[in-house]
Every structure is written in structure tokens, then in C-alpha cells.
Length: 328
Ligand code: DAH
Figure 1 (tube, helix red, strand yellow):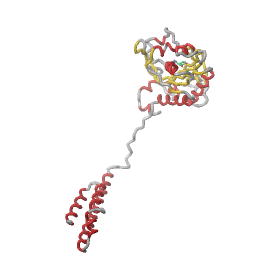
Figure 2 (tube, protein in one colour; figure 1 turned 90 degrees about the vertical axis):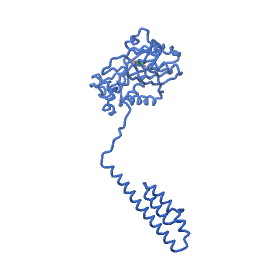
Figure 3 (tube, protein in one colour; figure 1 turned 30 degrees about the horizontal axis):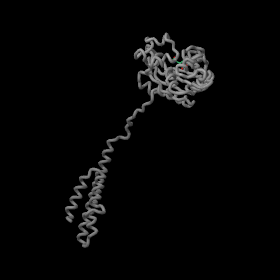
Figure 4 (cartoon, protein in one colour; figure 1 turned 135 degrees about the vertical axis):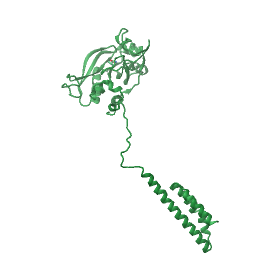
């Protein structure tokens, strides 16, 4: 073994090492248990060879240590480019849109009552949107002035009620479902109208369903959305797909019914429409109206969000202004 050559080779490998782990590999190669030097040291018989080899070992060890200190110093040097006293770069955390949050909250409330969440269609047939819902041929809402028609038989649904029809045609009673999503009407954009808006539809079909069941369900729903002990009131109304039909209000969540700006000093907030499912609707989906009864209701999600948060204008939901969105 050429001891001198080995030392030169080791020292140049040491100075070429750029990282601590490269340096460790060099140490193993030249000073490890199976290195040439260690094996030679084990074979040593005479004093002179022993001294030479030990001198080389010491030199290599020192070179390793020196290089290790250099590399460590360089690493610290790199670290000093990092100033821990500077403020960090904040990674903005997004959030779900207020309407999406409310939509999920409503779904949770109904799932808690044993309801299924049913996904309807946004592009509907005229039959599902109107005819099967007992809407007379001459009903003004069919007017192309009010409805986005795709063609003569197809439209963007004007309400979530056609989900009732689709679900009933796919399933047998009993049915307890909610269906939430976008609805479309050709309304001019202003503070209280957007051509795209959101509704929640509820449908219960079972034996002996009464208006009392409807009322209890709406109360549970209103308490969960607005909090506290809400009262529900029904006013007679008309919808083609319910008989009898009602519109329902809840006591104002802000003033508890005593009257304030939110409820326009009436103490009540209008929620939506509801009623007992009209027998003609059951006939349209092939259910026996003598056997089955049901209730349904529908209401606008956007308006609830507006009221719930005291917001002045529906258009805020569509502007995608982060300063507005990030508050929720
Ligand atoms: N679809 C009605 C609308 O958009 C709301 C509605 C009223 C839904 C009565 C219902 C109901 O399920 O029973 O104005």
C-alpha cells in the first residue's frame, strides 16, 4: 500500500465534499472499519509501519474535522440570509361562499330529521317544471318573458319543485327529502332579485301527513336556522301543486316579534310557500292519492342569508369581492 498516495487521495476527497453527508461518506471510505487504512493497521507487525499509518490516520481525521467545521459554518452562513424577525408570509385561507355554507347547514338540519338530500336537475323539461306540478297551461309563470327556455320542451328550472316529481317517480313512499340548488328566472337584477338564485324544497310523503306535521317541521327548521324559539304562522295562499296551500312566516329573529327594521316592523319574516301535496300531483307520478298524503314547502336560500346576516343587497353574493366574502 502506498501510504502517502492514500493520504493525498483522502485529503483531496475531503476537500471536494460539499455537504456533511458527502463528508461522512468520505470518512467511511477512508477511516471506516473496512477501509484500506484500518485493514492495514490491523496487519501491522513492525513499529515503523505502525507509526506511518497512525500518522496518516491522524492527518485524515484532522482534515475531516476541519472540513466538517467549514461545512457547518457555511450552513450557518446560509441561515443568516433568513431573518426570523421579519413578519411571515401569510397564506390566505379561503372559505366556502356564504350561500354554500347555508345550503350545507340546511342539509344538515334535515338530515338530522331523517331526510334524504335529493339532487334535482337545473335543466328541466316543461313537463317536470309545470305540467306534473299541476300548473295550468295558461299560468303566467310559463311565459317566456319570465322563464329561460332552452327550447319548446326544455327550460332552466324556475323552482326546485320539479325535484319532487323526479324523486317520486324514482322511489316509492314513504319519502322524506330536501332538494337544494340553483333556480332561474328572467328577473332584472336589483337589490332583491337575481336571475339565478337558490331554493330549498322539502317533501314528505307518507300515510296521514297533516298540516300539523308541516308546521312542526317548519318550526324545527326555523329554530335551527335562526336560533332561539321561533314561532311559525301560516297564511292561506295558492299554489297549483298544493291543496290547501299556505305561505308561512316566522317570528323575527332580531326583535323576537316586537317589530324592527329587519321585519319591517311586522314582527314576522316571510319564509316561503307550502301546503299539502295536491292529489293531481300524486296522479301525475303514479301514486294513489287515496293512499298517500304529503306536505311540501319551498323557500329562497339567498333571502334567508340576507336576513340572517343583515345584508342590504343580493348582488353582493355575485360580486366575488373578497372583502365581503372573507367575513363569513
Ligand atoms: N315552488 C314555489 C316557488 O318557487 C315555492 C313552493 C310553494 C314550493 C309551495 C313548495 C310548495 O313545495 O308546497 O314559488
